[in-house]
Image 1: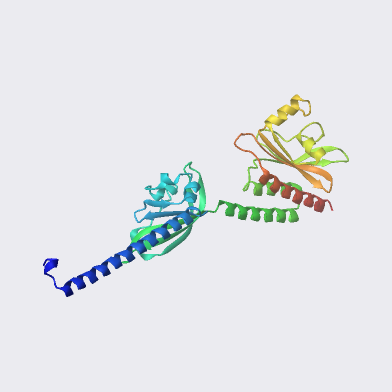
Image 2 (image 1 turned 90 degrees about the vertical axis):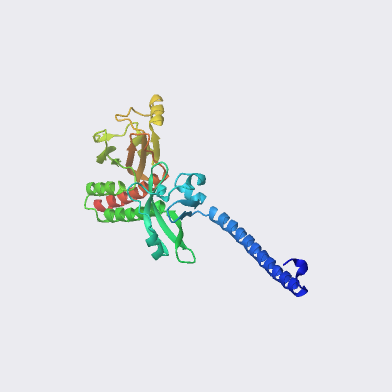
Amino acid sequence: MEDQEKSKEQLINELHALRIRLSEAEVQDLEHGRTRQKLRALEQLVDTMALGVTISDIEGRILYSNPAEAQMHGYQVSELIGQEVRIFAPNGIWNPMTREQARKIKRLSREGLNIRQDGSIFPVHLISDVVKNAAGEPVAIITTSEETTGRKQAQAMQSALYKISQKAAAAASLEQLFSDIHSILGGLIYARNFLVALYDQDSQILEFPYHIDEFSATPPPARLGKGLFEYVIKSGQVLFATSETIAEKMRAGEMDEMNSPFVNWLGIPLKKGERTVGILVIKSYTEEISFSDSEKDLLIFVAQQIVGAIDRLKK
């Protein structure tokens, strides 16, 4: 029927119905707009989070990854979109969630291992939330990841410090104490080359009751000369040294030639008050192994424990 043939009542009714439909469409557009605004706000929020976030479809393809997740694994965000989430898993330990498992669970929390683009593996805490549609079917998985390397290192450090203090308090001999400390340190830092030297001020003799070194034998007791040990003993200061700095000092006549050249060296004085009674040393023979303030701080604590044990055993 043409509009001209419709009655007034019919036209009014159709106009009313059309207005209702237009109003509903306007509401939907408004809701869609609000949803888009909320989505953009949420994306901006997640993009700035320090926690890694990845959204994948139920087949395991990455739909979204925030910058923190990408940086944690050594990628750009654009490199991850469309990849399978197995890109984060070391070979051989990939355990994807099946669709049946996703139907049954809402959240999965676990400790795991992830891999960076350069191949390095690191511990993570993972939480996966399953997104389901109105029919209860899983459609996506949101996973947050937090690297736990720092936390595990802190826990290991605290445990090691406690063990060292306990060993120092109960040691029956210095030789056994040095061996125990070396074993504990080996689980925290590079300590393959580890030695303890004690200095007797009355005799002015430096001796080495504990000396583990890849390339040099235990030196015999001797008077102080011009070397790294002597520098630390006389100055009472911590010393970081490299092969380059030692070469310069040898050319200047400030130090004697070293029998076993090294790459990096760290010496910690054993101090009783203002008096230096010995030295604790770690060193490396490769460029890949260097020492920093973290090793220094740890060894200063160890040095204090050793001095305490020396006093106790002398009584």
